[in-house]
Image (cartoon, rainbow, N blue to C red):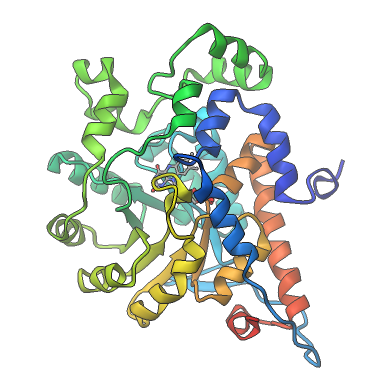
Length: 378
Ligand code: FNR
């Protein structure tokens, strides 16, 4: 069956994915924090962005290409960093990396990835970006950056919006952890996902493979606690300055929501500001990221690129974010729906779908170029 007929929208990929991932992985992916009002607030805020079409224009084939950090990308969106992707679908890191490369968009690997930097980077080639959670230990910090650079990353983003682990009640109930809590209920639920189980048994139980080398024997016994203790820390200006000094490539700050922080990031030498509320996984009553975007764009004043994520689910949302001033847009959960639903083919399909939806709405709005979109805000 034609993929477009099978999965005409990201929501269709999501439905298939929800039947393929085991409960523990699905709860990890979907959860917010608290009552999870933030997750729906991100979505509602996107829905509230309305636009007006213009006619008497022959938009022709709209041009979705855009320039960012010295490169032309096929579309203004990319894969946001999502930890242990291979828990949600075995081999997901490499599948998404290959799909992103084939689609001409960036793939961002998380620090807490289920595969090592060195294994994933070659699959993404020049489309490989790295996300850094800042380790307290300076040696580990330097080593992660050096490894990313040696593997070919020239864009790195430092995530600042996890000063401490958040309380994810839904994840706790589902037994999410490192290693997962193997209760009889969890095992029974995993048995209901034979394709995932077979692939996982072949590949091995997922783990934060990228960080295993930094853990002592004692740490390994309680790896979740090690990762939590080592990686969740406030990113101070001094710490950021240190990172800036070491990283010769483009440097972004992920998790910025306030224009004052955006100005501070520019002063500290950031090349890009990544507006995000972490998919509403840290604070339940956080402002929607799409609403924080315009003020941050203004504060950056053209001195840094401004990208955004949190709540983007289709090509329409990408158009809305670009209309509100984003230079580039990222998707976390939506990309996972693709890879869980159909492996690398599903990931590629999600990317094609997003690009085609974006191109279509640009035509509908009378926008031959992405830079025409802000002029269509209602
Ligand atoms: C994330 N996110 C994230 N961010 C980051 O900087 N490092 C990480 O390791 C992770 N891990 C992670 C796991 C899961 C399961 C999710 C859903 C999210 C946040 C991510 O990069 C992005 O900000 C959000 O996913 C954006 O919201 P949407 O697109 O999921 O709505």
